[in-house]
Image 1 (cartoon, rainbow, N blue to C red):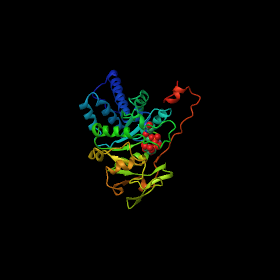
Image 2: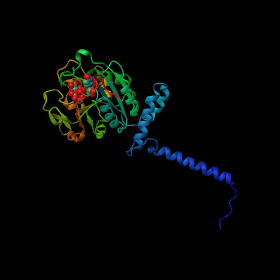
Image 3: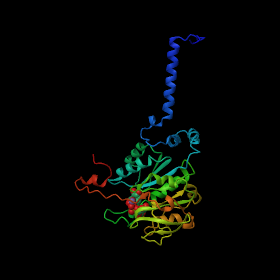
Image 4: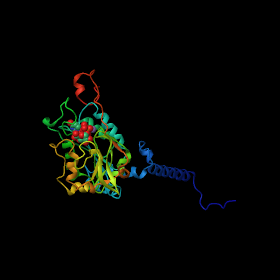
Length: 327
Ligand code: UGA
Ligand code: MN
């Protein structure tokens, strides 16, 4: 019925060909099925996974082979802007829990670089190993708040500004050493709660973008008021006459703008609640320059949650003071 094939294949040739075809098929499957490589990536975002992979590689390579890092980085040049998330943090019993929760959120965000700044005299191994385990591209810095400026155990939490020198250390790093000069900078405290959608809202910030923050300033929602796409006022009850009456969690700044104003930063000795206005006043001329996000500032995508200080009266006194489990 079939014409005879011009060649006779030996059994060995047939087996070898079948083996090679199967191996090639498996390789292709492995390459295109990103889940084979990263079981933690649940969402259908192979492109995002690939770009994050290339980004992580380039950050790691830059330490020992800059030209190799540049080559890998060129793979992600056409990718969306990076979000540099800046988190000040300090040693206390809940620190590891806070940072674990945060890292699990940030792992789900494509193209994020986490800049963690410890309020300490040196990097701690607790934070270093947590960052390593997170698998996120990260930078681990430290800056110690001077003793006289620190909160004492029984001081009310509002008595002194927090995270100021740490955020300034991050700004210095961002301006001089950040792997990409485009991107957006977001100051994400370690105890807040972040909706993943927030990061896509801020990603294409031109100068400064703003949105509502839940559970802050004595309100369920503190938010900019928007008319015809412009910020025209504020729904703020606490010190509403501040120039920009918003919380640190309520805005993001483009890295380009921060580079254009190389001296703009936070300041230790400011009245309570003025850090945000102080920074923004150095970058833009007024609320009219703000870019409202989150559906014209009607959606809450971040909450100023605060973790209760745990009662550890059954613990020996040494482990009560320090972070981590007393095991
Ligand atoms: C509010 C604002 O949301 C903060 O952005 C602002 O920094 C802070 O007030 C302020 O008073 O300066 P609040 O919840 O009172 O936030 O402050 P914390 O969450 O206790 O601290 C803000 C950040 O600074 C956190 O990421 C925290 O880990 C860090 N921090 C706090 C330090 O690095 N060192 C400290 O001694 C205390
Ligand atoms: Mn807080």
